[in-house]
Image 1: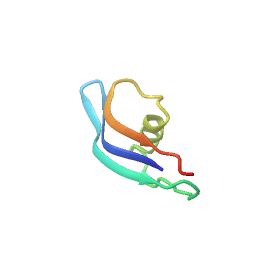
Image 2: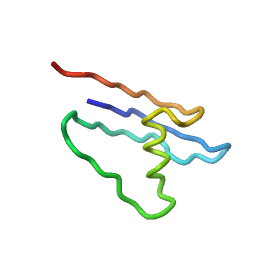
Image 3: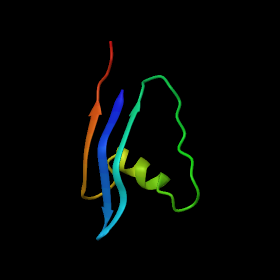
Image 4: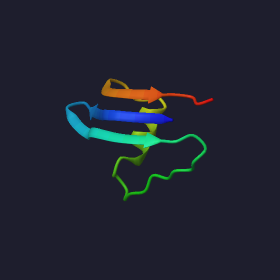
Length: 64
C-alpha cells in the first residue's frame, strides 16, 4: 500500500498541488488522467522522489 497524505508541491512560489490525499493498494493497476498541464507528471515525479522540496507524508507498507 502506498499512501499520500497532504501532498503539497511548489514550483518556485507557485503551488502546483495542494493537500492531495490518495492511497494505492498493492497488486492493483491505476491510471492518472487529466488534460495537458493538469499535473500528472508532477504527481508521478513526487511519488518516485524526483521532485525537489515539497511537503508530504508518503507511507509505504508491504503486506505479508
